[in-house]
Amino acid sequence: MKHIFITLFPLLLLCSTSMTLWGQQQNIILTGNQGTGSYIFATELVRLWKSSRTNNKVEMVTHPEIYPEHRLTQLENNRVSLAIIDAKTAHEYLNKHPGLRVLSVLWQNWLYVLGTVPGPYLTLESTQTLLVHDNSLYFAEVWKKLAPQTKLNWFNADSIPDFSDGFSEEVLTFTAPTPLQEVNDWLEQFPGIHLLSLDQLLVQALRSKNAWLTPQKLHANTFLYQTEPLEGVAWYPVLVVRRDFPKELVSTLLQMIFAQSESLNPHALFQNLRRTHNIAFQKIYNYHPVAKKMFRFK
Image (cartoon, rainbow, N blue to C red; front, side, top):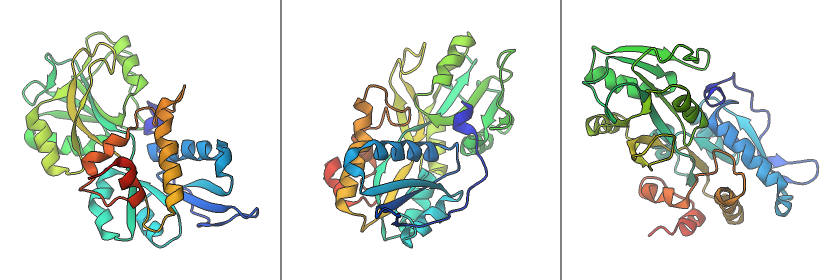
């Protein structure tokens, strides 16, 4: 799980959309820092682009930018070609950039809840101690307001617990892509822990404070020993371009992205991408016309 959580210092953006020495058009994708999901996704997308013989006239490169709102500003100012932002930033800032368009939502980030508490649900009444990753602060803030007596401990990229002596808290929670192999490893290694669903009170409370979260279900058998569907919340990163981004490039990029789930060994962040995931967002985000057509929006 460390490769999902680790965050490094940002690198400087050294160049903008330009022509290379060989006359190629260069398209820069702004992402989060190295080690973040957006950087990993973009790096794999660049690799796929370079390996395609039909795309040798256009170059794709990745550059990290720590602040997602700055990615949108640079994109609208024509300094870069694409940007990947988180759902919270998309909900709060995209409407302030009328010149930008969404190409697609990307992989699912699920709020994982693993615990030793009885029953299939995480409830306010059944939990006294929580171990929360820094990336799930939004969950902790809502939980603490509803159950201020709960003892909360924290972990992050610099303090990943090894659980060599078992789980020290009743419940562990963090946000990460689905599926995640480390979750299967923990379920196999530590008998007695299981994945928990969120009860409707928690889902509603999380949504009321964080409109960028979406209620979701994970199918049964997504993970080991998970015989029933899981109920919870998730969010989807968003791939953004300017509204004048070439239609032929939009079509090529989207086809490449969604074709990966059918490949023999798809990258983890690509394997569960579905065009239909965008349907829930068609009235929330302003999509590029080519994307609208591809996703068959009404």
